[in-house]
Structures are given as structure tokens and as C-alpha cells.
Length: 555
Image (cartoon, rainbow, N blue to C red):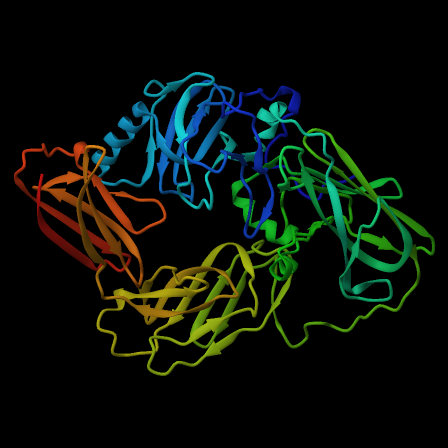
């Protein structure tokens, strides 16, 4: 048995991991588990249900201290990070609010840095916490579509994402085994056939032992669509451990227990991303493509591919195991049957990105530099150029459908026009859903930025318009006075903003799921006297256009 990839850190046996407490004071039920495949990332923690409402108390799962709080970062909304002396950090996300002690220290740093959003770090003696200590109230902030608690656990030293169930899973009730739904078969182009064909095909799992025998020859990969389940809810979950055996010999295994953050995007290469885009169903491959370095995957010397090169029956079996040890098996037989292989090159007329070398993609007016090991395997692409006379640049697309690189790579687009008044206002825009600002460093007639989604369309745009500020007025809620403003930028997007009252900084906090900012006046240095004060807000966008709004308020 050989490993296809080397582990980036020593695996810690589960028996030596600390057993932490639940972060909630009711029966813990999961809406999602660790490592579930999602577009462009593995789910980095567990989602704990809060009954569909906000305002549930959240407790530290272990002793330690609050090492950091983030506001408006990483899609987490409001989040608390607790450093534990055992070498782990627990992260509590999408919170509605912090406890008063934490909130006070966060606000102190926000005023010192003149920013409501960011990372706010604390020393061990500032915010110590005990096992089970109340630290926050659950919410729906950040990239959350419904109220819940997203809990992550990281190795503090390496920041590797770890499965929280290895620490708190002993408190879950789960007697349900995983279920396999269908196989996907991947005959390798020019090297293998299955059931007489050379294209990938799916086979429904109607039973735990498929009665039909199939035929194959040459190099073939297999994948599986499967989910895990628990008694307490109808939600489905990702598979913790998957194994593929051929004639009782393990050729592939995955154990989704710990994922390096930098390898998060490799989920698209381990999973069948193209099929997911068509069906929203993930097939996870029981083989490792050459560009994959995920330490959670182990294979034989063939990287999990099965070589059918003898005229005999091959007995294959998938074994699925969840965190609690519940297990399912799915067996099937494949007859080795000599077949003619299609050795004609499939991509003779297409350009190719190589997984193992530096790729310098050049088109008229575009450069894209892709470093080695940024894709799972050698991949063809067909670039398209949309000529746009009179525009700042032509528009470019590298692939017809979504194709994500493992990390952002350098891209440059040439400026078409000679009448650009201020080249520093140029930037690269990505048309993919909502338009995205990708950067803009002007140099010798080119604008440099970065790109990751090759299916998107890229072009240059120009932004010399400042952000728009709309004063929404003042109000009172439960005896507390506040003022609100709406802040928008339709081009490159907001970079920063700062507000003052009578020249003194005041904190503007974003309201969830909106472009509205709110200042709670009791937190400011202004005292309620019923007199007039000058409120001023300055906003700056990514191209350094600035706007300032000033008005008189009575407080």
C-alpha cells in the first residue's frame, strides 16, 4: 500500500484528542458536517441548528482565552476565536452579538483603528474563558442564509481545518449508516473502456450487491455519490470515510478529518465538479488526479485507478463509514474483457493547461500566468475574444463553463484606448454573477490583476465616480438614539469609510444583509444635550475616488 500524497502534518490519533463540551445548552443537531463538498471549498466546520431563530446562547467548548474576534471577515459575520491550551482554536461564526465584556474590548479596538470591520486580537490575560462559559448570542450574520452556529476547530500552529466531531461528536446521537446512491465510472481517454464505451457513465445502487456484471478493459476510475444521515433530522451530510477495495485489496481511501486551508479549492478536482454544475450532485472520485495533494486521500501505486488487464472477474467494493463507526458496503463485479482502446487524441485542436508546469497563456491583448499544481489534471481550453472597438479593452473568456483554478493567478489585459485620462482609474472586472473587482495595477499599457474562474468574462473598466452616500436620518429604538446612512458604489466597490461628529471619530457598523451603516450614538463621545452637531462621512472606493457628506444633527 503506497500513499499518493504526503501528509503535511502528523495525524493525531482520535483517542488522544481532547473531548470538548457542546457549544449550545440543548440537544445538538447538525444542519451540515465537516468536509461536505461545496463549490470551491470543503465545508470547514459543523453547522449546529438554532431552531431557525437568532438569540441562542453560545458557550465556549473548552477553557482558554479569546484570541481574536472578527467582524465582517471571511463570510463569518461576527465571529469569536477561542485559543485552547491543548493546541487547538475553536471558531464560533455568524453571531448576532458578543457578550458585553468581549463587545467592549472589540469596540475599543474599533475606535482605535477607526474601523468597524477587521480582525481584533487579544492577549491571553485580556479575555480568559472557562469550559462552558457564555461568549456570544447566535445569529445570521455574514454569508449565512439562515440562523445557525457555524463551529470550526483548527490546529492553532498550522491552521489546518479539523473535524469538530472528533472533539464534540461524543455528544451526538447517530445510529444511521451512510447511504450510497450511485456509482460513476470514468474510463480514461485512450486508456480504458467500460461496458463497451469510453465515456463516463453512472450506475444506480439498487442494492448493496449489484446483481449485474459489467465488463471493462484498461485504466478505469470510479466515483461515488453518497450521503450520511442522522436520526434527529432529514438533513444529509458528507461522508467521513470512503474506501474502495479490489479483490479485498484497498486501492483508495479518504478520511475527511483535517484539510489544509490552502488546499480547500482542490474539492473541485477530487469531486466531479462538471457533473455538480449540471445536477447539483457531488460524485467523489475514488482516485487522485495527478495535481491533487490532499492529505486526506491515500491510494495504491496507481493512485486509485483500476487496471483491468486480465480476463477474469474483478470484485470491487465501496465501504462507507461515518464518525460514529456506522458502516455500509456496496459490492459489484466487473469482468476483464479485452477491448479496443480509442487512442485518437481527444483534444488535438484545443489548447492545453498543464498541471505540472508553468502555463503562460497569451492571447491578443491578454496574458494569464498559471503556476504549477493549480489544476487537478491537464485540461483543454478554448479561449474566446469579444472585440469591443471603443471600449477600454476587448473581453476574454478561457473556458465555456465554470473552471476554477486552485488559487488566484496573475492576469493582465491590454488597454485599447489612447484617450484614458487617468490610467490609475482602470481595473479588471470579472463578469460572473455579480460583477467583481479583480484589481488594477497599470503598467506600460497593461492592467494587471488576478483571476481564478476561467469560465468568467474579463475586461477593463474605468471608475472615476465616487461612492454614493445617502443620509437616512436619525431614530430611537428602546431609548437608544442612532443614525443611519446608505453607502453604495456601483463600479469598483468600497474600500474604506470613516465618520466623525464634531471632528471626533464615531463608529459606523454595517447592518446585516444590507448596504446600511448605523451609528449608535451612546457609544460615541457626543453627549445628549439637545444641541446641534456636525456629522461627516468620507467614503473611498477601490480606485481611490472619494466623496464626503456633511449634515447637522440634533442630539
